[in-house]
Image 1 (cartoon, rainbow, N blue to C red):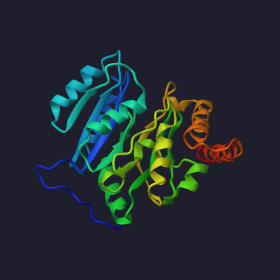
Image 2 (image 1 turned 90 degrees about the vertical axis):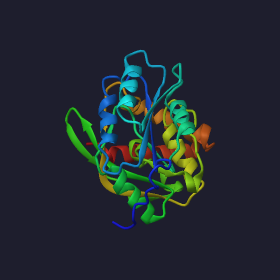
Image 3 (image 1 turned 135 degrees about the vertical axis):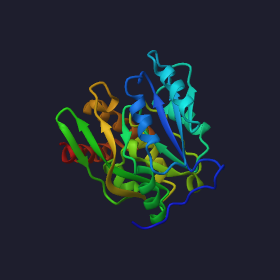
Image 4 (image 1 turned 120 degrees about the vertical axis):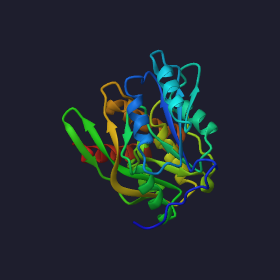
Length: 257
């Protein structure tokens, strides 16, 4: 492992801002928050953005924030979608590094420490890691390439949102484009138009819990979101979009457990 993790001085703004959109996630949110609290690199803040939940999510957020001053709760007031919730968290974030986690997923305790050290050692403004895909059939490892550029990412998205971190000191604050699905993919493409590559640490440092009702549980809906990113956000031709989408389909098939 190359690179030495750079920590901020005591009393300064946190090094990392962890952004978690929350919508009707009362049953799973404590698991996600506990995985951040368990990090062996403590220089972080956790932003929990209630996106108009109608379950007990607001009460869970309030309880978590009362336990640790590094946890802050925000509210959207009404359901605006995950992209808008993440952008609200970005507006409130104080950290140099922006990390993403979904309310129904979790991290392993060494995730921030290992990833940030790797990222700094590689001189990367955007990084990602491998992860475990948790399904009813068991636990499956998702491996990632050690480097990807924008042209490669157009053909296949290898960056899991629950693993991504970007450096605001290099990129500024880059918001999520406002799409219902695949807004994270659109963000990675935006970032890679500002830097040469993203660095991938091929270690499984996060847990992706695949639920039947999640946005990404439907492959067809996910592919439709990818198509929208190509045609609307990237303004690619139908031919170029179709070619890149074929790459996505092939990549998904290769990763299937």
